[in-house]
Length: 140
Image 1 (spheres, one colour):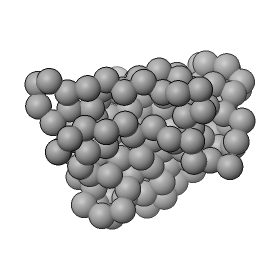
Image 2 (cartoon, helix red, strand yellow; image 1 turned 90 degrees about the horizontal axis):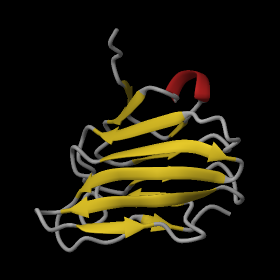
Image 3 (cartoon, one colour; image 1 turned 45 degrees about the vertical axis):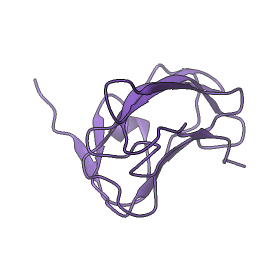
């Protein structure tokens, strides 16, 4: 059985019954914000891929509240060298700007709800220019 990706073109709050276990493809050159549900240790997996390079604003993935954080790392590469960007203890947001922080066509992130308050994150972000971390603590 195969599944078609769920395409989003504007800011969206992700839902377990719709987005968990599916691929969510962001086709928004002007960027969009995807908000995860509150983590509860469900094991649900959310796969986000960039289907249209971000050319203005940002493609953002954010947790639902000031309690949840992300743990893990993503690779960010403009060429074969690339860099690996780990989260910090307060990382709760991924910002892809279409250049140094990823967001170029083909970038993808996988997030798993591993425990109350924690999202495991991994992925590979396609970038241009000098790579920079996409992680920040922006949810209040």
